[in-house]
Length: 318
Figure 1 (cartoon, rainbow, N blue to C red):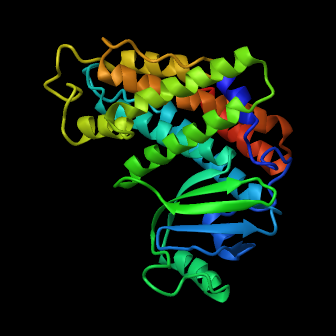
Figure 2: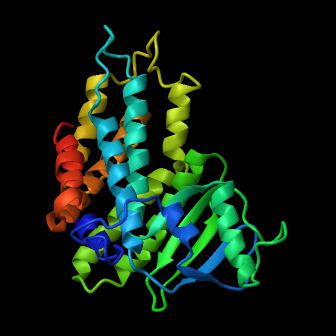
């Protein structure tokens, strides 16, 4: 997969470290305060200069592994407890969540994260900002709980930007942040020292993905899930639409992409909406699988066990 190789060049330094020295969520890294808040803080954004990057990648790697396990676990479950093969609603929902976790994991490899910060998390951040007299005291310059986009900049100097995620609803916000990640990834790939033909292939994959997500303003996959799960559209529930796809068709479309090593190719315009959606879901899972193979190749001890016996063992059952 060309995109896996090129995206590897954007990974956080330390993601491939042999061991995990810290197994904590990213929000704990923000709370620990190994960074200096910069002037210009508002209730929607914060920029910080990182004075110690020690263990930074461990926080991201830890979440990558947990999210990857969730992605693979969701993907391998097959709904067979119904007599009618056209009953595909819950199969679609599981593939959606597999992609949701995969997108979260893929971003973290490169220092992006869509993360939910609670009141306690924001209090810690605001307190530190107050100590440096750059904010954290009034409604205009202090953060409150919500979904945020965290982006690490390698530097030098190393820094981060924390901003309120665009959109409404945690699922739409995730996909909009993922689009921001794809935009950043595309810019980084263009700077790659790789042969121009390889760069062009990776760029085409990114742009194909972008076009799929932008079909509904960025939250297309979430809209498909909502259409099936809440609006009972696409004929996935009884009485089934004769033109709908069955579980076997969905699984085939998902699996061919989820096994990794593929180049993303969007569905034809005439394809069923559910087929089109699970193709994207499968590709994200396959991209993640290929990435975790690389990550596992340098891992040791507990980190290797989590990747090989956890993520990759589950992936082999798709």
